[in-house]
Image (tube, rainbow, N blue to C red; front, side):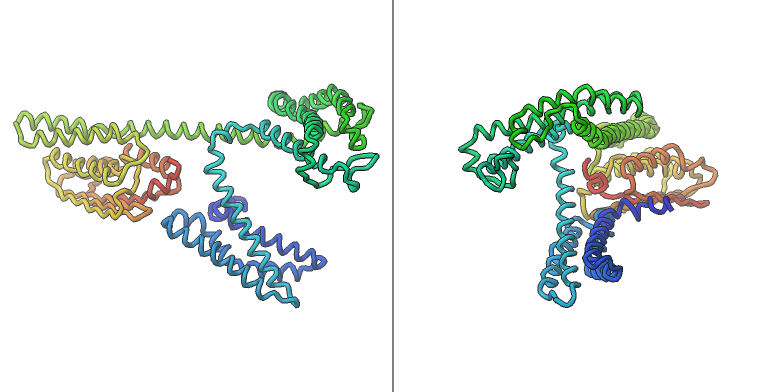
Length: 504
C-alpha cells in the first residue's frame, strides 16, 4: 500500500490535484455542517463540485506532465482556458441562475471562487520560491530577525489602536483601557508622545517573551537538545524559566501601561501564570525551531549531494576515451611521412575537436548545431583513420538549431560503435546515425554492424554515459539498447536541456 502511495503518478507529481480535491471536500463538509451533519447534503455538494470542477481537476492531474511534454505557449493557453475563462464563466453563470429552492448553484459558485483563490495562492507561492526567496535580503533574513520585526510591527499597530481608543467611552473607562479596533490618524499625531510611550512599553512586553525564544533557539534546542537529549532539554528549560520568570514578571507589573490596561500582569511576580507563559513560549517555539533546523540540515544534504554529483560528472567527463586522439595522432604522423595532401585538413579538424572538448565540455549545455559539427568532424577523421571502407550514414533533421543539449553525450555512442563494431569487423561494416529534434525533445539513433567475436559492446564508455545521463537528465531521458548476432542499436531520447534543467 505504501509503495503504491509513493509512486510518482500518485504523489507528489499530483499534489495540485489533491489540493483542489481537498478544497472541494471542505466546501462539502461546511455545507453538511449547515445541514445538521447530513450525509446526503455532503455527497450532493461533493458531486456538484466535482462535476462542475472537472476541467480544473483534470488540468491539475495533468499539470506536471504537460509542463514537460507541451510547448510553453501551448501550456499557457491551456492554463488560461481553465482558470482565466472556464472558472470565471462558471462563477458568473452560477451567480445568474441562483435558485432559492436549491443551493446547488450557490455551492458551485463557492467552488469556482475558492478554486480561483487557491490558484492565485499557488501562483504567488511559485513566484515567491523562484524570485523572492532567492533575493539576497530574504536569504539574509533569519527566523529570529523575522520574529523581531513582526513584534516591532505588532507593538506599533497595537499602540496606534490604543491611542485611537483613548477618550472613547466604549473602550476608555475609569477602571481600564480596552484596545479597540480603531485607527484615528489625527489622535495618533496629536498624541504622538503617548503613542511612542505605549509602543515602547508594548515592545518591552514582547521582548520579554522574545528573550525566552532566543534562549530556546540558540542554547536549549541547538545545543542542549542536540547534544544532550530530551531529558536535559526539559530540565534546562525548567531551570531557565525558574531563573528568569520572577524578574520578568516584576518588570512587566511595574509598567504604567500594564496598570492602564487594568493590571494585565499580577503585582505578585511569582504567580504560576507568569511561569506558564514562559513555558508556553518554549513549547510553541520548539516545533518551529526543529522544523527550521531540519530544513537547514536538509538543504546542506542537498548541496552536498549536488556537489558530489558534479564531482562524479566531472570525473566521468575526464574519462572520455582518449584512444581516438592517440590513434589519430599516429595516423597523422603516417600521413606526414607520406607527405599526404590530407595532412593539413586532418590537423585542423583534430584541433577543432580538441578545442571543443577543452572549452565546451565545461559548459552545462551547448547548441545542437555545435554538437553536430563536432560529430561530423569526428566521423570524417575516423573515416580517414580507418583503412577499411564502411557504409556511413548521418541523417540530421533539426528544425530548431538552438536546441540545447549537454555536450559530448552523443559522441560516446558513436565511439562505442567504432570501437566494438566498425574497427574489429572482418567483413562489410556499416554505421547509420539519425538525429532529430522537435521543440522539446531530441531523438538519436545509432545502429552499427556487430560481430559476436568482438568484445563486450557495453564497455566503460556506455556505463559512464548511463551515469552522466542520469545525473544530467534525471527522469527526463530514455536510453534503449538492442543487439542481435549482426546488429547493435542504441536509441536515446533526451528533453531539451532548457526544460530538463530550467535553473541551469
